[in-house]
Length: 306
Image 1 (cartoon, rainbow, N blue to C red):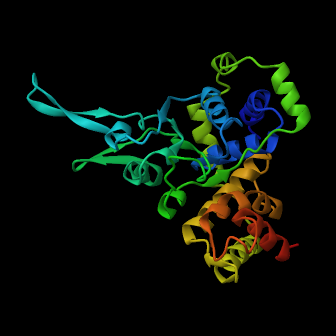
Image 2: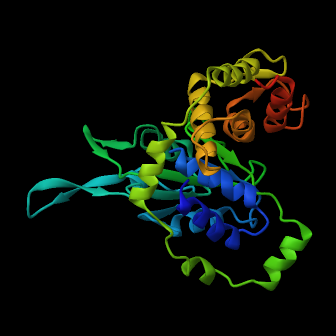
Image 3: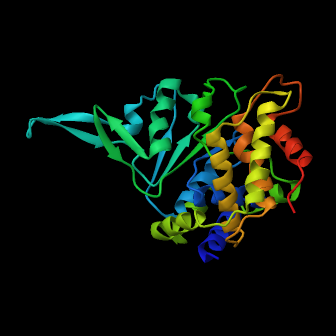
């Protein structure tokens, strides 16, 4: 349906080898106007994926390296007094870009993390009673290390809820890792990436997501999944209405990426673990390995509409 999607897939899979599904879901998130959280151990390609996605689009890009001493003003900007004009001027922070990479977001304190809340939810920033709109398209790609690592601050539920998808890359397969070692070119390969899509094409595709046809039976199927998370004996906090909205939009985005203008059950099944897995809180970590696996168990137990 959109040639740039295939071109972007080809570009990213040439950099992130052996992770075609991860690449596809990152594109689904972009098309669906969502924000992406990538979590995994250091050195498996989290930042590389984010950088490659940004470089392959004709969009403005800013990278913020989150550290323990980072301040909210370092992200959104600050008012500075201009002695010549005798007034304060707003100096925009790095959040004023089409694609913002929040690298190692959980290495900074909750106060600084919260500086992104309004930007991610409403695509605007408020500073001292003034509001500044963010550019369109706007996407935050955040990476974080597992909480077991030293110097990390867990993201609060309200912050996690702003991310449409939560991806884990994982270690590459043996053959893919061997290919990575043979073809090792460092950061030069990222710098050599040329844009394959314009801002206007991204915005147009995002608008098309709204036109994807959804049969009434699929609304019921999606809501049964959401409702089950709220009633399941192993879940303390189920999916919110915002989570259900994100699930529907990501499912539509998945249909667009697959070249369709109508939704099928496989679209919902493909994105559901990544969209709602980080939105539920388990009663006990020993109940099942993790929330994403439990979501897959729930999906398998719900009949698919014919």
